[in-house]
Length: 440
Ligand SMILES: [Zn+2]
Image (cartoon, rainbow, N blue to C red; front, side, top):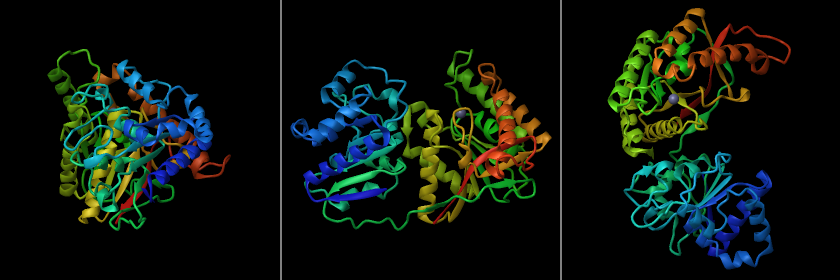
């Protein structure tokens, strides 16, 4: 998080202008999104008479997706248009924080509903030009906290846990937001922030599994077996790993019609999977899933409770860049729970293993943990994946999981573990992770 103090409204505008320029230089015709209030702060007349601005905005408008003109934004909302599927991610999002810490039309106490709900009116207006997801997933994010009397003390949401009562706190989910505020001091630091370190690449064999508690945070019932079934099923620590099923996955397409039958079908499949893998199961069934929320502080409290009870040594979580929105929401919420646990001090250090799966693959240079799977481990994994019959009927995840484990075993020895052309033995099948150590 980067805080920039600006003495006047003009210097706030100059800061935003520079950010847009940087984005244009980096991305060439970037996709840029504004919210209405940020757009108002721009002072449209000034932009119209400034050649530099015109050039910048012309560069942006080539994409056809950037929300450059206020009229265009209103028009888009009136038409309830579908988002352009070719634009996966904004390059730059510019949003502003209103009075009482509102952001993107969210006022204190409103639930963080996800993009499905963003076209729906809230009260009598359509306040959201951007969804939370677009804001959080944008490559760069600028947050303008520029009221005449805004001081650094008004930015409490920068430090506090993410909560619906201070909607601007959701900004914390972004990897590296820039907060531009109107004030005179840049004197801000967050002494309680945790450290994240990435160890060198390692190959785990059967004797070296850590001995402490392991939690696998599972967005849908079948993710544990698909992404880490080989590792979990052959864990040789002091205690069984625990699969934390964050949702029942009942929204997935199935032939059976009712919610109840889809729900019980997926839960039965999950229980059979956990028996196959010989792991423990927790089913907190977080509310965000049924309530269509992007993020829920209530669910974070549930996760925090699980962390407190288990005191894990390792948490396996989805990657933030996972293409599946439920996976991403789960990742954000587990991360926030871990952050709170570290900041409050009862958790001192923790390994986080980010796994891959059908909607997210690690790039070779980010893989730093390779788990070789014995033949039985691979068989057990596939048996567990195939317990999810309702899903396999739709998509052959068992074939996908087997192919991926084999592909990693074939390519990694040259790509990551030795020089090109040479070889290091890692077995027939592997699972890979991005491991990091979080500590205070
Ligand atoms: Zn999933």
